[in-house]
Each structure stands twice: as C-alpha cells, then as structure tokens.
Length: 294
Length: 263
Image 1 (cartoon, rainbow over the protein chains, first blue to last red):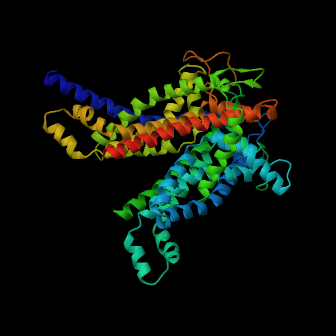
Image 2: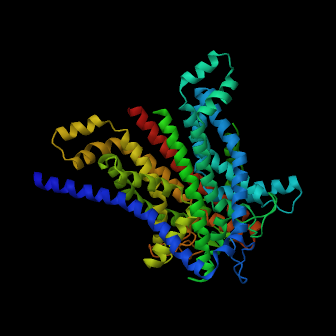
Image 3: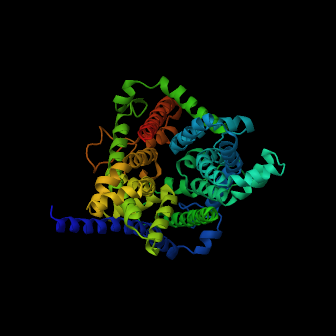
C-alpha cells in the first residue's frame, strides 16, 4: 500500500472511531428524549399534580394514574435493601482488605463475582420458592411475597457492587494513617472505625449510591418476589409493586398510544430521573475520592 | 463469610432440586403438553441467537468507542461529555432500555417484535460495559509499545491494529465474555421487544419471535396455570441458566489465569 493510501485509511478510521464516541452521547440523549416525548403526551391528558399527589394506580378505572403508591413501594424496598446491605457490605469489604488472609481473599473475590453474575430472574425465583415460604412461616402470614422479601433479595444483589467499590476505597486509604493510629495506641478495631473508614467515606458513599441505583432499577426480582399489589403499602409485610414491575407487567398488555401507554413512559421518566440523580451523586463522591488520592 | 453463605444457599437449593429433573431430553426437546412436559431446546437456541446478535452489534461498536477514548481523544470538554454519558448509560435501569428498544427498534424502525429487536436492545444495554472494560485493557498496554510502532513508520491506526489490540486482546475478551454472561441472563429489556412464552419449533431467522431461558424461568415460576406442577421444570431451567452463566465466568477466570502466567 502506498503511503498516501495508508494515511487516508488512518484519517478515515479516526473519524469512524470518533463517530462511535459521539453516538454514545446521542444514545443517552435519545433515551431521555424518547421518555420525555412520550411523557408529554401523557401530561397533556392528565394533570401532573394529580399524577404526583393522588393515591391510586389503577389505570383500568377512570383517573387512576397516580405514581405515589408505586413511588412509595420503590422507596420502601430500596431503603429496606440498603439497611441490610450497607452494614454487611462495608464490614465485608473492611474484613477483606484489612483482616482477611491472602488465601481466603483469593477465594472470596471470585465468589463475590459469581454472586454478581447470577441472573436476576434466578434470584427472584428463589424469592418465590425459598425466601417467601420462609417469611410466611416465620411471621405467620398467608404468603411471603412482600416488601421484606424484595428487600432481602435486592440486598443480596446490591452486595457485590457495594463490597467491590468499598474495598477499593478502603484499600486506597494511605498506610501511614493506619500506622499513625496504631502508633498512638489504638487497637485494630478502633483504627478501622475511627480512622480508616472515615478516611474512605467518599468512596463508601459512592459504593452505596451505585448499589442503591442498582436496587432502584432492578425489575425481575421485585416483579417476582413482592406480590404485585399496587395499593399504597403500610409496612414491610405488605405486598407492593414498584415502578419497574408496573412497567414490566402492563407494557405488554396496553394498546399502543393510549393514555395508559403514555402513563408507563411517564413513570419510567420519573424512575430515570431518580436513578440519574443517585448515579450522579455516586459519581461526585467517587471523583472527590480520586482528587483526595492525587 | 455471609456472602459465601448466600452463594452457597442459592447454588445448593437450585442445583439440588434442579439436577433431579435435568436430563439430556430436557435440553434437547421442545416443550410439550401445554408446557408441563418436555424440554427447553427452543429457549436455549433463542438465548444463543440473542447473545449472537448482541455480540455482533455491541462488540465492534464498543471496542471502536474505547479505542477512540483511549487512543485518540484529548482531554477536552467533549471527551468529558462522552465519558459521563457512558457512565450514566451504565446506570440506567434495564427496563428503560426495554422501553427504548420498543420505541426505537420495534416501532420507529419497524423491526417488529423479533430476536433482532431484542438483540439490538441488549446490545445497547451492553455497550457501556464493553467500552469501560475495553478501555481498561487498552490502558494497560505500555506507551513505549505504541511509540516503538510509530517510530518504525506505522500510522496510528496500524500501530493500534498490529500492536495495541493484540496486546490488549485477553483483557478485551474477558470484558466481552463477562458482559455477555450478564446480557444472557437479562429479562426486562426483552419483555416487550420479542420474547415469547411459546413458539413451535426453534427460531430460524432474525425476524421471528423467540424463547429465552430467563424469560422461560419467569413464566414457569409466576404465570403458568399449574405452577406447582411445573416447579421441577422451573428448577431445572434455573439450573441450566446459572450453569451457562458460570461457564462463561469460568472461561473468564481461565483467560485471566493464562494471561497472568504469560506475563
């Protein structure tokens, strides 16, 4: 090949590579625009105030387009899962990076990766056949498909994310901090809780945010394990239905371009904005950690 | 410790009950008798089709984008925007990709509910992961190798094609396989874009609807009219699905191990 030809190929491919980069921006924009466009069609028909303040999601009846019960349900399982996953995840991460012998580490890490790889339907399936009956017999309920079940499963699913990122954050704390603390007479536990963990805090918050983002957006697990009742929940033992589950169930059944169809895009937009904010917060704390290290 | 316990419980429960109804017939036959008997062959074939289309779409695209980011892009505002788009794409719930696939591929591009629409949707979902892992792999290639190639008179593209990519290949491969194992287990994005509970025969072209393992498990465990009766089938399907994902993961460990011993 002549030099000229080679240089043309080089320039051409540079443009192609750059185009793929630009398309990713277009993709995010496209998703946002698609959601917004279809939501607009919904808000033309239904008052946004009713949408956020009403108390019923019951699209087959007149006027039952309120996201409120779905939003409460989503928040309930997500918060519940974090209550379980945060202490467990951070302690596991601390144990892994501070105390665990090398050999155990090399076994635990692949185990955590495997846990992360299990498909969400499989976890949801366990919610039905294992966790559900367990909760039912422990609490004396008719069935165990409720918010508590969903929270437990989502906690298991968020754990790998939280552990991996927290561990990186804890490992990133300079060794000198620990040595200074130990040198002042603190024991290993005092050092962990009063020096190492506070120093890793931005990273830990980032880990929690990314775990929370995963729990908020999870569909199949909550769809299968939380009982699917779109009424306003009163506690962890009520059956619930999250935003994601509502979309998954109803989208297959609604006729194209009806109010109900657009309503599902509207709740998806709300979910999109919530996860976007959670992820951006996680990003912000992660970048603070990076600055701190450099 | 607890994490291992969770993993152990999950595996024990599914495998102990799944293997008892797992047989060669289960894997090699179509479902029959209104889904209460027979096997899952169409679902396995469907998942393979789906993964193939996802790969064909997301791998060239994702690798090209990673090459741009790591090899060409300067530290401009535009690059920052691309990077933050990718991070945010990774955080979008999978069900929203499903809606986007429905609006774009099924309706706007008129591909209908088909394995093609579903594969493209999963491809979009996989993109950010492939880009991130590929970029990590490219970053680990030492700069001196690029400089050496350029000094010998290679153009930048030639240096990437002949030096950088071969060196980064194991890392790129592990990223791709991990992403695909995740995509193969996804259910939410394919719900509205082409998956079907039952088709007669197996999927033979990209315009057809298809059966998929994760969706099959979902339907068997929640939507079937005689749920208790098909429970053994559901267990066996779960066992096959998890085995498939673990196989892909083991492949990743193997590639990593080989690569490490080469270094």
